[in-house]
Amino acid sequence: MAHANCSSNVIRLSDFDIGLVAALLHRYGLALELLTDGTAIPGSYWGDEEAGLQGNRLIARPDTPIHSVMHEACHYVCMTSERRLGLDTDAGGDYEEENGVCFLQIILADQLDGFGRERMMADMDAWGYTFRLGSTQRWFDGDADDARRFLETNQLIDREGTPTWKLRKTSKGP
Image (cartoon, rainbow, N blue to C red; front, top):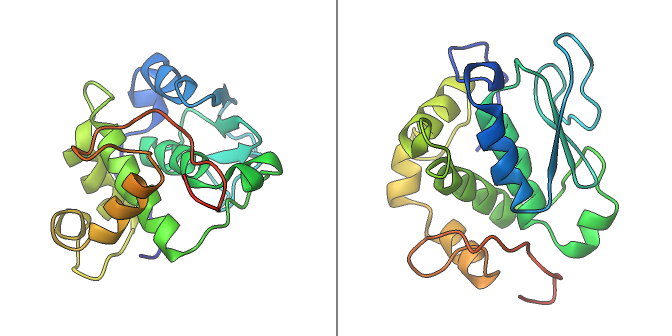
C-alpha cells in the first residue's frame, strides 16, 4: 500500500468525540495530545495534519483525520518494545508490520461508536491508501491473511479477531 496525502472528505477529530479516541488510545498506554489548528505537529512523519508519535504521545490537531490517529496508534502497538523506547516520528517496521498496522486500525475502528470499520476503510480509500486489489475493503476481505497472522502471532488480536489490548513485545517473539 502507498500513501498519497489527499485532501478529501474524511472524518477528523473535530468531527468526532475526542474523548472516545483518547480512551481507546489510553488502553494501549498512549496519551493523546491535542494541539490547536495550524500548529506544526511534532513527530508527524507525513507533516500537514497527519498525526505524530513521540514516545507514548500521539500528537494531533482538530483537523487530523481519525484514520491518521488510528494508523499511528497501531504503529505504536505493532512495533517491538525496543523500537518503542526511542520512538520519535518514524515508526519504522517492515512490510508485514505495515500490513498488520492497517488491519488493526480497521478492527479498532469498531471500538469507536459512530465510526466503525466501514467508515475507516472508506476514509483510507479517500485519503489515498492503495492496495493490490484496488480497495481497502477488497484487501481486508481477500488479501490480508498475512496481516491477520502477524497480529495473532504477536498476540495483538485473538483468533476471533478481537483486540487483546496488548502491545507487541520484543522482535524475538510474543
